[in-house]
Every structure is written in structure tokens, then in C-alpha cells.
Image (spheres, each protein chain N blue to C red):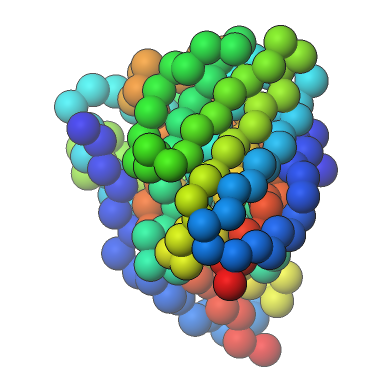
Length: 112
Length: 113
């Protein structure tokens, strides 16, 4: 069975600073990878996805993520964060024909 | 707007009661998923339906059941409610295929008093 690890439960970052949210996964087969964002009192919104091809994927709101097969990682990055990026971020993995598995989430707090 | 509609947004009820949560998927999506989100358990997959048939089961209690109707909307039924069932319940839908992302509704917040 697959699993997803988001080691950082909370990440505080100063406004306009860069941020990296870490995600590692384990799976015995190839996977599809996703990052979702959850703003307060809202549902999860898809930020970006890796299906195949280029390992660097760009998403909405200036976020990008890099798939690293050898390290089984899919870290999320943004070069300059804004107050509006305050939210919870979930990494998710889905092997082919299996269910989607979410990490425990990382709460990103932007400090003015 | 994800295109997934969940009703009601909030539900307050008492222990032992039964409630029904409703979900309308995005137009054209055949798959519907239900999730439970709580502070202590995180985001837990409950069940998936595909075109009216149960496709996958997760950590769904026997007191909970779901179904997907011919018009593809889905309902999650929660019975004999306990205090621990208080949580956010999300519905998501997707197009066919494991590589298709799931699109989430805004959830139903269930509070058991």
C-alpha cells in the first residue's frame, strides 16, 4: 500500500520569502502526484499535478513542484509568498487503479 | 468554484440521530468520493462510487452508508451518530481514470451535541 509523509506539520514564513513544503511518498508502483490547498472553511483546491513527462510542474498561484523519482519526493515551492497563501497544504499520491492517499497536511503561516 | 455542490453546509444534531449528506458532482464526472476530515484523524477516505456502483471502500464505519443515483448525485447516510462523528465531510468527483484529479466540494460541517 502507498503512503505519504509530510514531515512539517507547520511552516511559518515571512512575507515575500521563499518556501518549500516537503512531501515524500512510498509505493511499489508508479504513481500520480497531487498538491491540494485548503483555505479556512473551504474545501480542497487542486494546486498542481504530476502525471508524467517533465518533472517540474507549475500550478496555480505561482506554486511549482518537482518530482524526484530516486528520492520519492514531490516538494512544493514558491519563490515569494503572500499573506493570501496562508492555508493548509496537502500532498496526495495515487497509484494506477488505486485510491488517492493524502498526507497529514502542512499548515503554512505567513508572517507580515 | 469546483463545480461540486454539497448540502447542507452545516448540520447540528444529537447523538443517536441519523442524517443524510448530499453531493452533486461536476458535470460529466462519473466518480464520486466521500471523505471525513477531523482534527485527530486528518483526511480519511470513506467510499467511492462510479456510475452508480460502489468502486472502493476506505475507513467507513458500518453505521455509515452511501449510494449514487442514476443522475449521479450521491448521498452519505450517517446513523446512530456519536460525538466522535463530528467532522467535516467532503465529497469529491473526478472524470474516469486514476490520473484524473479529484475536485472537492466545500464540505458539510457536522456537529453532534
